[in-house]
Length: 256
Image 1 (spheres, rainbow, N blue to C red):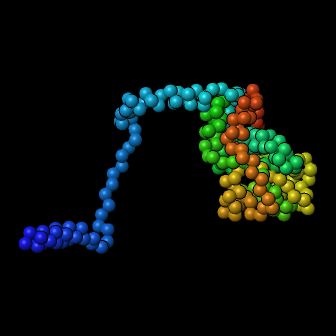
Image 2: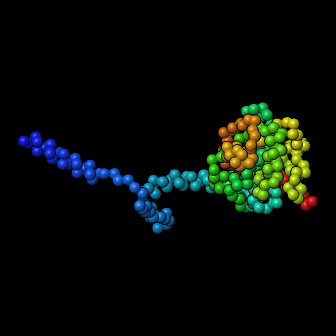
Image 3: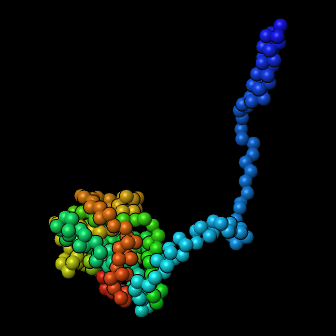
């Protein structure tokens, strides 16, 4: 009798459990949410702040230590087809990448092309620090060297020439007419030769973007430098006392 009553109790409890957990299907009726602002109204936890403080202070010390000096602002809008900030970036990439590429492949770097949108900040006049490098290049982009045949290089130059943005270049001289048609192209001081291959340093972001970005649709080879673009900027800052870059004639547009 006790055994029977126990089984009845178990059956009743099981039924109630299954009924209460019944999974009804249907359309979602409502989603509720609210925005929680992260601002000065949130008080820091003292114990956490004390723990983080020495690490934060050390990071700020490293980021804000002076590496070089800018005698004037380097801007992204001070030239029609090239800018002082864009030229500084492209020249840094060329200077820092060429010896690495040469040591690994035995070949010479021909020119550099970057994208205007990849340069995220200007550099103001005064002391220049590693923090400035992070402001200019906040992304984890690496420098790569792409091998292109002459036909692909011409398409690349045409793309840059017709672009409305001032894409930074170095090692190449481009002259276009008032309608952005190519008038002349020199690479490393020599007329562009469509019958040969060229080695172009750029960002892995552009290479991975491929046709969707428009820079590199056809590549023969890609050489990874394992060199963050930001680190190249910092290394350059450490090497020089005073930064130098101006709007020049590396990319010009004629009036007629």
